[in-house]
View (cartoon, rainbow, N blue to C red):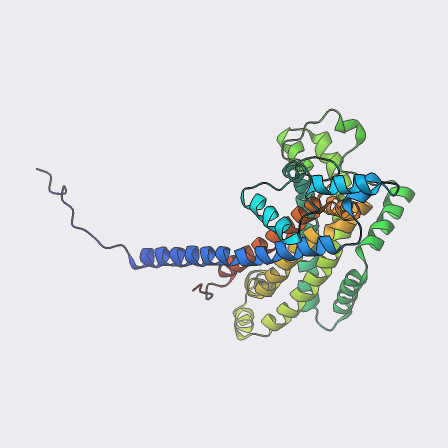
Length: 361
């Protein structure tokens, strides 16, 4: 007869209970932060709705031209619902927004949701490329400056970072186009893909580099990367400089700690001390800067996308402002705000991965 049929109940191990408790606390913290985003987004929607309508100009008159008659202008305003009180317009806008109806562009008559599905992946691709450039250049530069503190390398690195912060995006974009497109013809001057490939390629996600990989089409991947280089560098230079300065400041503080001196006294290789022990503890403020910079990239892509004819959210909002296209501007700014707060929430949750002492309550 088997004697192991009725096994005695054993309580879970202490570390298992601790893991379950941490996951529960993290989930509750995440849910609480998500609920806290609702008033933020409500306030953003109210401010954007009011500010857009404060822009001089009438969408109906812009649509019809300067020679439009008052009767035709009134008719268009009535069709668009712009003749109603602003409070009634806002209530209707929020009602549509809560049901997932973002409205229709006043000028193109294309549903906002369709435009977002087509344009947002382009901006996301550009922002990811710019952030990769900023992190891959900025973090090593900051570490190098901290390790070689008060030397010529440190001064040169920080001078480079200062120049990067000081250069306006539009000026850097035009300089890059002049040097690398007009003079040397290394990179294409604008757009996301060559015209010849546009007619034969059907995108999947509208992130062209990813789509080229998914389609196993090296020509598309290479062409999309060539078009991506200059906009990504122009957009990512300022975040790169900020990340480099923050990394240096944080690393200088960490390298003076006792545990770093102890690791060196034990005979650990300098590379291990810097990249494994010091950098991980110095990354918390750097991660915060990266999160804030990524949200800024999405909103700062307006100038970059306009200069390089990049068909993303930034150029879409830019065109909407000049055309007084209220639904376009409202939806674009609200989307950027949502992504900004979500990125910062993800950054907050990632702190525990770098510092186990951080506890969420």
